[in-house]
Length: 231
Image (cartoon, rainbow, N blue to C red; front, side):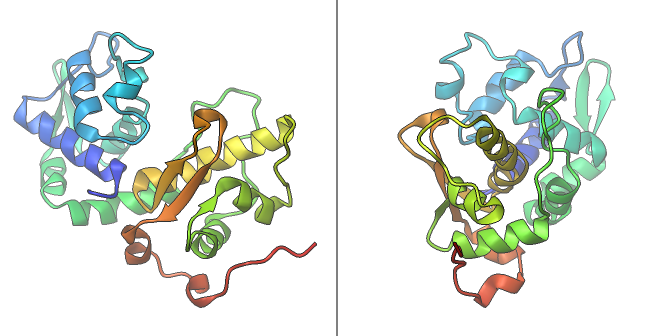
């Protein structure tokens, strides 16, 4: 839970439901503000802390705390909660999983990484796909992130596209899609740790493997040297 925001959010939200008689729902079936405000503080989710969220919002609704979207979908998919009147209550399975985070991680991790639709909220008409697969992505990152790597480096190795000083819409779209579908899931699951640069949302970040990476993954590239580009 120290390294995985996703697991931490799942466990804490199920424990909240058990301790508070459920997660309150609004008339539109969204999680209520009381829970959302609590979650923003309790989850300690990088990039989604109260200090960052309340800069643009006076109050927080469910859609303002974006990580609640995968948490809610996973809880329902795994039948960890059930609806009772105007609340979401933890099921017996949900309570047992929340009580054993290591076992819970083993259940959630492969489903979230390999089966979850990570770009559901991208605009229609955008190119949602990324060329490649998890076998390629994980082995490449395994090599490149030994001492930390930037997403621009991964894009260059994978697709031969180098970052330029001028704006390139195609390059920007490829980077955005790759980050949403590959980098962000690995960070949210807790396999990678992100260190943003000083440019904020307009800059790149450096990504480092957490202890969960080697604990969870055994890859062909574990003993291979760092990849070098051939021009």
